[in-house]
Image (cartoon, rainbow, N blue to C red):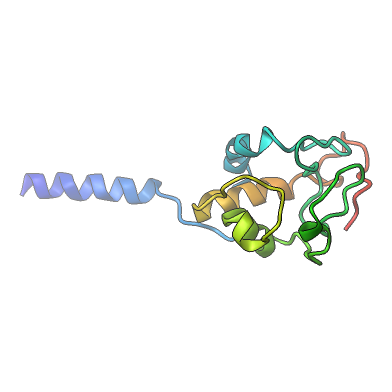
Length: 138
């Protein structure tokens, strides 16, 4: 009986700390998870790396950042980076958009993807007033 009670308490504690995937995500957790992206992407306006800047990416059309050479697939995709499209792309980039230059395998964990997207959604001029206005308006 005592073992059953202890097991129930342990399971309840684990369930209480488990975080289900949320369509909104957690921007703080997303900032921590972004380290996987930071090797290739900047979060500063007009600062491209191996990949384009992700500043103000949520709501932006794909393939429009100045001074970045996109693949033909990305440039001609007609995509807009809303939350749903970002989630599908970030899950398996090369499957979602064959011909993309992005070599990243993807983020399979739904909650982690939503967290990263929530973090990216904070990188907007109205939410980061100390950052100069972004030239990449949607």
